Length: 487
Image 1 (tube, rainbow, N blue to C red):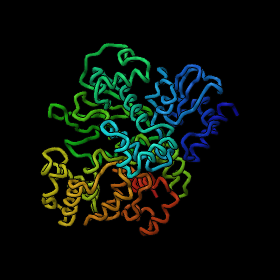
Image 2: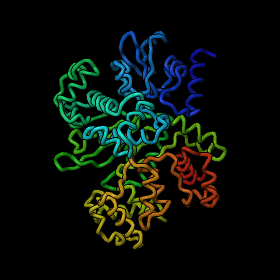
Image 3: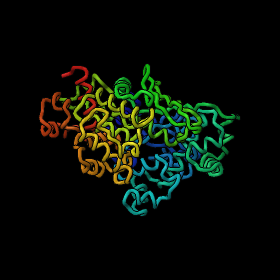
């Protein structure tokens, strides 16, 4: 076997082994780096002692001697050590670190909060408090799992987004700073100079005066089943709110002038091409996490595929439907309400109810909690108990007893949902799967699950244990099998 083949075998063994640790073993990093294995893009970064630059493992430049490289689990850790980003392979365009490799649910929740911009407006003590731990414990967990600090990681993420915006738009640099979440142009310039050792204008290398659209390319980890995701979203799309046309997903977004524009996303190879209006009321730093959540871009396709394909029950389906994904929620409240509407009815019936809800209470947009808290929701054509459940859900969001986003602890959220009258395990599990993005969420009470597996809920639950920790993806395969007449 060739040297490259040996490297590849070692990398595959590591990926399929799902070893959870801060950094792949040095010998794995070395093999992946020499082989330029794309599956490790974003899993670690390479610092070169002789140049002071850090690169992605797929960087096309000639590999330096082993004794002259250091491996880092995050770009922020490399920057903390004094390295600056390579301008050729652009570490800011690397795939994101898979959550399963982090090894701490608390750190994963912290990363999601940082991704949502929490540290743009708060300090690390507030972040720790939001997670229910001390600032010292938070710092220790980040150092243990990511070899960096929350602030360093947040700074690097802002800079990475800024670089993407500079390459993918004609935004003025002041607008780039705003969209990336810096808060001020001065802060943007200072952080840019500190990391890239040059001002933003020198890195961009051209003068621009603004434009109507931002275009970004978001990488994903193959395999990725585009057909499954786009079909799933198309069946649930609400006219005037979102749509899927010829494989392109479009979502209405508010503009700064009070109007409405459209964000669009379509697939190109192993990436998602995203276009959004430059004058969105919500900055790109807030919109991008929504897009990644909806399309499940950060899932590690190779690991999930290998796990499901090895299962005697799911293996054949996984082969026929490679790269299954769990489409997430654009808005947590919207998805939660629609989960209640979907109780004991078909997907199409639930969609028609949501369309009527948009028309009656939302004025063309999906209604907010205030609009539904006092509404007689049952009048759109469903049982009174289900309408009461929608009102209870809206009220819980309004009073703050329930927060519906991916930064929440899935167990606590599930318990909070089940405490509301009219919301049971199926609905809570569905919300955990799509809103919190819990990869191991499963719905043993689901009608399709019981039918396809020919099992009771208890039997389905027991049968699913071998699919952990990817039961949400196994559920998608079961739904796919049902829709395609597989047995």
